[in-house]
Amino acid sequence: MAYDYSSLVKTTKRWAEQALTAGWINSDAAQQLNDVDARTPDTLFNHNGSRPLIVAFMGGTGVGKSSLLNRLAGKAIAKAGVERPTSREVTLYHHHSVAIKHLPEQLPLAQIKIAEHDDESRKNVIWIDMPDFDSTEQSNKHQVLEWLPHIDVLIYVVSPERYRDEKAWRLLLAEGGRHAWLFVLNQWDRGQTEQYEDFKQQLHKAGFAEPIIFKTACGEGLQADEFAVLESTIRSLATEHIVAQLEQRSSQVKKDELKQKLQSTGGLLGSGSAFQQLPTLWQDQWQRTAQILQQGFAWPIQQLARHYADHAADLLSHPATAKYATTGAKLSIWDDWAEARFDDALDEFVINADQLGIPVSPLKKQLSALREKAPKIIQTQSELAARQALANPGNALHRAFLKLMRLCEIILPLAAICWVGYQVFIGYYTSNMTNVDYLGVDFAVHSSLLIAITWLTPFFILKKLKPSLEKSALRGLSKGLSNAINMIDGEVLLAIENVGNQHAEQTKQLAGMIELCSDVDRQPSIDSNSPLARMLID
Image (tube, rainbow, N blue to C red; front, side, top):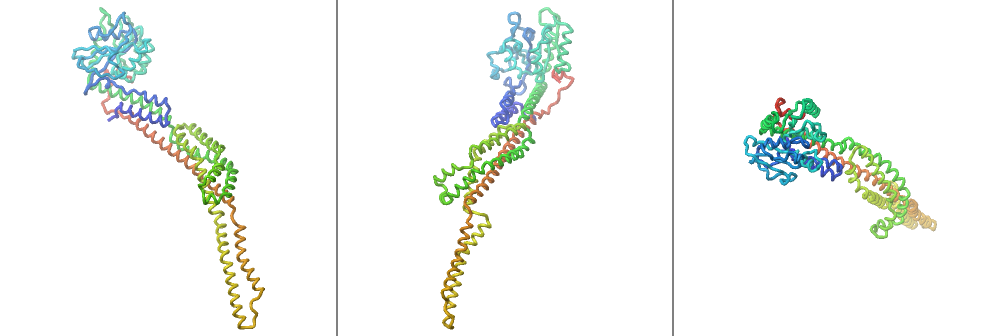
């Protein structure tokens, strides 16, 4: 079953509103979709089941529309004639059984003249006399435009003098596919065959292969005309089957118009292939910017590394002290210059994305948070890496060697002392059993020197090979900066991915609505040989 047109219009308007809010479409495109008219002839009156055929006389000033309706009613129900050559009101002529107490709010009853009849043969037709749309009064044109969506069949009335009216012609071309059309060349008693043929040729150009044209004359005592055939044709159309066919065709024509608008709007969303280029586009941009930032950070990093080295004890033992926090904030490597370079990189990336036909508003929204987040990432990562570097200064091999020296600083003196003690004990023992002299002064001096050397050698090595805190801090800051740059790159790529996912969702929703516009009711097509087929634009 085809999707209901009014529901489709509501879905379209909801999508347009949220797409505008998210920045995927501009206000003009959103307004174009919001202006889609959901009104149909079916919405004119409250009814259950089948409804009457709604027919309207339409034409310019002085062509005799009101006179035709009066002739149909057999009495003067619509104002016409010399006293009021311009119709300024809408006249409804219908069977008394039709309830019209609840018209749409755009069509207030106070501005409508209503005439009822009891003719059962005309029960299934509502006749409407429309105001003169070519009048200088804008209210006339407004009324015509408000009523047009509710009309099934438009009877386009012209006169021999005014069948080439430009305003009427523009309206015919604009509304041609939305209605069924019958044409009346009124006041035919003043017309010529050449005018009839010329009018017919004009209708051919408008899209009518074989238009139905009635020649009428509404004055008294004039020759017989085709008014009775016109009325008979309308009655033959007032069947439930033909009304359903007209509704189905009108709905599909409007769906086709909506489909064109949606497809046109789809061009504003950008292509999926363009979004696939964004990561590469950004990484090229960021590679250049990161190189500039690293060069510009060289001096601030040295200053900050010196500061960290001077306050290493405070940093590692009391990192949250106000004094350090204040000093650290002053020495932050992220300054106005760095912020300007980062903003320039984002701005240039957005410009390049715009040149690819990508809506930049959603991208700007995603990137705006990064403008504030980037300094925090730089500060956090550089400080973390500096702390880690100061806690573990030097490289792994250096730290392993120093650890060995610390071990030697303990083990070697102990080993020397043990050796000296052993020599003292053995010497004493040997001296009691032999005539060998006991250990003398030379042994004492040499033993002391041995113990001193085994202790002093690791001590001086540790002292001389102690890692530079400034170099360690500098190395840590450089590592932190590199990590921060990679994190910022990842954050931007994540933002690009989010925008790409949003674009895919918007495109999916739009494609779904376009598909619904292509969903046609499975109803029998209009017979090409029927009068109705001649009333429709090919």
